[in-house]
Length: 507
Image (cartoon, rainbow, N blue to C red; front, top):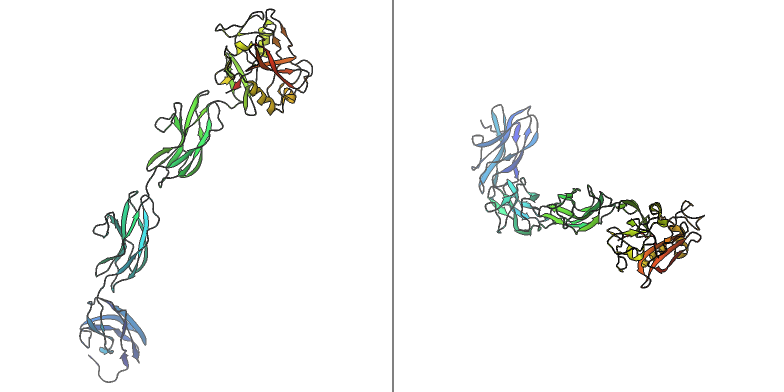
């Protein structure tokens, strides 16, 4: 029943906003003297005075004077409507003044494609901004991409889904191929359809092998060494493994190595411990790094597995020789003692047998002071300076220049003798002048054998006379002399037939 005349309840006029293609928002109020309104809301239609017999939206009871609003949906786009509020009390219905409006027509949403950033070999970052919903509801948005151009949801390789509505959104594009050109566009979907933003073109990074530098080999012992490397580029990929590999044949790789280390992942420097080596063997080592493209190697380095000089002990001819590092040189710490003892009256000859003199023709003196050798026998009958002579492989008979390097390092000929001589009086006669042996050379006074027909020996305990591989003349060789009563070193020429001591220097 529709009341007539005055009433204590008044349904207010309706105002509207947010007119869309299929919805609108309505506002109104109820006033008057009443204890409770049983129902209130809005009714609408295409006629001038819509009522509850047609489309309406109930908002339920209302306890006091107040405003109310509602979202009216399910309308038709581009259509004229009338809407008014209502209030119901005791079977009486009160209507407000009707408001006319026309819904808008749907348009496509407007979307802008964002710039492409964060390029890798297999991914990129993009996104977009939905700046208009086209008078509808944006139900889907994201980006789509392909390699042929003009990407859409129907021809794309793949696409992202980034929520609904207007505003900015980011998108992560994944599963790409390296070094490939792609086209990407943002999209947005509403009731009208799908629209696309500007097409952006990008090229994924080219996947390359990593770049790695092999470090120097250090801390070499008879069974271990330290190496490593530096991965300076990941090749636009992910370095999943790095380390060093080694072998004895050269150009070591993971496929032909005797062993390898695994020293983490990624770029940067790393240290590798090489183990289970065999003493006296030459090894080759390279650093390696692996990414999705494959494995790359640094330059090859080589080293000899043995204890460093000073710890190295050389076994040669059944005798162990200690070593000593003096400056940049590595010396035998004892005089050479190899060969068959012959009598001092005999000549050492080129007969394929290593021959030596022992002071006083006693092997016991050779055990202490080493053998005494004529220059030609020591040099094995060659005259090349620095030749191996009777020294073991990897060692040689020092040249006069190399003796000079030693004495210069020790402060010069005037003081070097004292720094080279063994201290004490066990072997040197009296208190050997200036003897400190701070070099560790441990020179002993083995005397000499004259090597002539009389087979004489002399100056045991007083002189250390040691050959070089340099000639002083056709019949003479250069040698060094350390005297028990002075602390200088004398370097001079003496007859090659003389029997002097010998030391070996590392190549």
